Length: 120
Image (cartoon, rainbow, N blue to C red):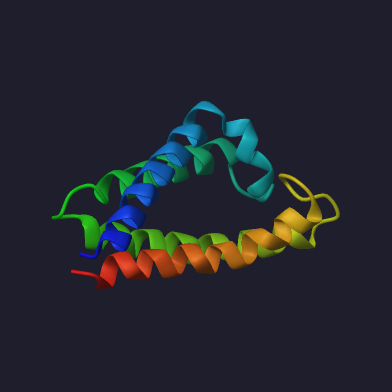
């Protein structure tokens, strides 16, 4: 594994573990991303556990590839949510511009997950 991909893997691991923890301890921060038709607390906690687990999985050679695939899929699942948020009059977090920037950021995260998955 190249040093660049190793750095991405470590940063991703920390980032996703942190995001997972934040879903658990600060669920109100994420509630506006979750459509009202879904049980907000349940979705928040489930996503938090998934994000934490996937981030942790990046630190173990046996689970790195599975975690990278999981992160890739999670970013695909989150993409429509970010598009929906960008179309709202008042986005969940930050300005309309920030909401729009989060969309290409999803593709960057997907690409990084792909790099982790494909680099031996």
